[in-house]
Length: 149
Length: 66
Image (tube, rainbow over all chains, first blue to last red; front, side, top):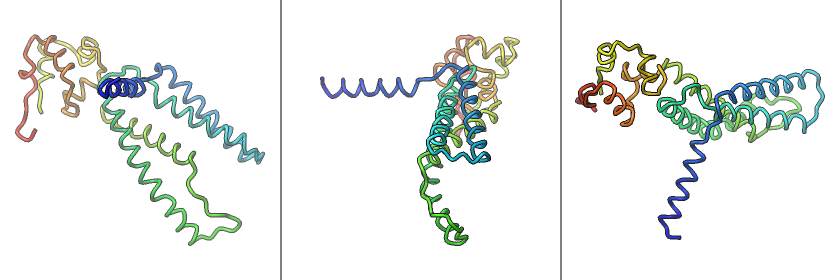
């Protein structure tokens, strides 16, 4: 296989992945999973049943829910929507990187100033980063859609 | 870039929604083009051209700062 053929096949693979979208009704399923897991996670905090695995699973379901919403089609998925999607993705990516760079510094400064009792300085977890990325993407996409109503 | 999409639409007596359905996009897309917030793809411009039965550069005009 020559170089061009390899590049073509890689390009097709990227396009297939980028263009993959779930049907519109999946959005409701995504929101359902998101709110259900968020509700259970909040409830868990009040009930104070501290199951680490239970919490991790719920956090993962929250991320899956948000990912489903992210890759679900709009009612009419046309070129404007595609355009707004890519703008929102770029925005979320840049803000995400800035967040990852700045947030630990802010956390550390707050930790130094406040010095909470019985608390250790914690770095950013993968859930926090992914959750932030997906929420920023969805908010930016929603805002851009509203601007184009 | 400016356009006279609104005028062309009025000539054919179409609403934004009707025009959107004819070329397979959402009403928001038509509105965004008319208010100069979105520059459509060549494909969409050609679809509009076929519908209005006019060349694209009759209803899309390049401005000096483009």
